Amino acid sequence: MFKFKYTAALVLTTIHYFSIASPSPQTNSNAQCLFDEIMCCNQIQPVNSIQVQMLAGLLGINLSGVTGQVGLICTPLDILGGSTICSTVENVTLCCTGKSFAMGIIVTDCTLISSNSS
Image (cartoon, rainbow, N blue to C red; front, side):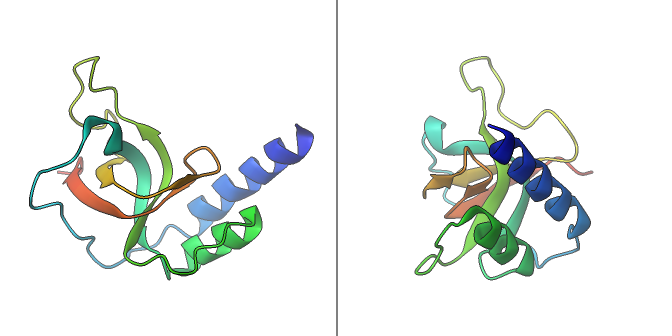
């Protein structure tokens, strides 16, 4: 348990430290996303970004063969509770159709549904 807490703290610190501007993410233009694929994530990054590669390495996640964008620190959106967008400005709403690793720290195959920034 201690090892997981230490690793999670290290991952969160790394993401915060490396939060830099990245290219504009792809938008989910076809609006076809199943309710269980809608995620509220801290960031969206290209899979080959230094942030994603560093996190994957720290967590022992093999992302070879994965292309496109990934969500970082994601939780499922509460559609049943009536929410259709992430509740905080710092997060983005994504459609993620790939795998979730380390309880949502990295989620693959994500496209942007909307951004909360104005």
